[in-house]
Amino acid sequence: MISVYVKKFNPIPDSDWSDGETETLLFSIPNQNGNIRPFLTATVNNEMGNAGSFEFSLDPKNIWYNIWRHMRTLVRVEYDGDTIFYGRVLTIDRDMFRSRTIHCEGAFTFFMDSVFQGEKNGFTITLHEYLQKLIDAHNECMTDAPEKKIYLGEVPGFYSAGIDDIQKITDDTQKFGAFTDFKKVKDCLEETLRDYGGYMRVRYNSTDEKLYLDWLKMYFNTEVSDQVLSVSSNVVDLSDTVEVDNIFTHVIPLGKDGKSIDGTGGEGASGGGNGNRYTITLISEGEGFETYGFVKSSTNVAAKGAIITITASPKDGYAFNTWTVLAGEVTLVNAASPNTSFEMGTADVIISASFKKGQSGGLDPDCYLLSISSGQNGTVSATEGPQIAVGTRVYLKATPNPGYRLVGYSSAQVTVSNGSFVMPAKNVTVTAAFEAST
Image (cartoon, rainbow, N blue to C red; front, side, top):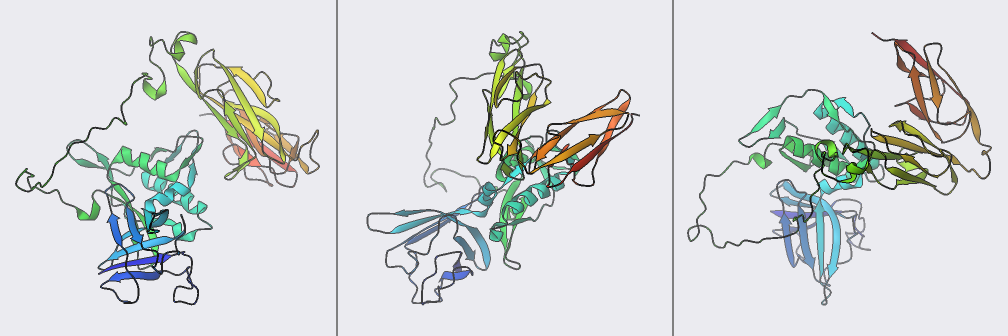
């Protein structure tokens, strides 16, 4: 039996379809409801490694003609009690005869709706823990759409795709998420999949009505067939298509880690002659997924000696405060100007832009005092202060004396995470602790 269910659809007044929030049986074969008109056409397409799709068409007299919502309506297809497709409506087409074709994308694309922020030095954790971090980041973005939450499912082993076989990888700690920007969770999962092989799928569990991410060696215990394909024997048709979509007309060798190779005469040749190129990363201050302004640089990669221009544009209700160099040891022409520049050195550069809330010619009245101390074994500075507007992210920089190292920060008012915190509506005292290096 084939059954199709829908949820989150436009209800039909004065009918059994008056809810729309509850999963409802749309159609089944054999038909359990004789007064329901079937689809004109319907096709489920499941591919290994892809989200899958479901496409069907309706004539204008069909009672389901107007129930569909783009990116909102959920559709589930069952075959003999097993869910073979679960996803959402992506596009709705209508032809000159007003027949509608509904295109649905599989649940794996839900990961396109969520983002994950890495860290400069990455997370030293197991692969399983990294997967859970990605899942948690996705679900955190789905607060208003719980039906799109996904949980970690079957992960029987981690696999590395080799030429001859697939080898199991031990679950040791490794470095993951070594980036400072936001990436779609889907992109993070696919990058990990390319490194370790196997297949990922999002599976609907009818018992608890939840979605699970599985990472499998093969789909549905698939076995390799030893059947020989032969024209005129068991091959009815055969065609060959050559596409030019992936043809490159210009190739620039960048070498290891995206740095140009010596002697190529590229951008690196004008910067000190060593051919090395380094990255420029700008960070806009914010809280959670919200930033207080926009930042951009004249380029994201440059060689030593290149002049880089950076610009900060605050959002409504905020004003630019200052730039802070977090890595790279470059000198800004004017750190207090939203438009400034610097000369590229011989290391990757990370610069943060901070903003002040409600500033117009002076400090906002809603400001509080920051006090920092460090004892005798090192010094600590802050990107803001001493008066700081509520909601401003403050970055701390500790410099230990020779023979000492930073232990951490302590405060009774805030939690310092990765060397920064968001200013609350009260005065804050932060102390940096140092200890002798061993």
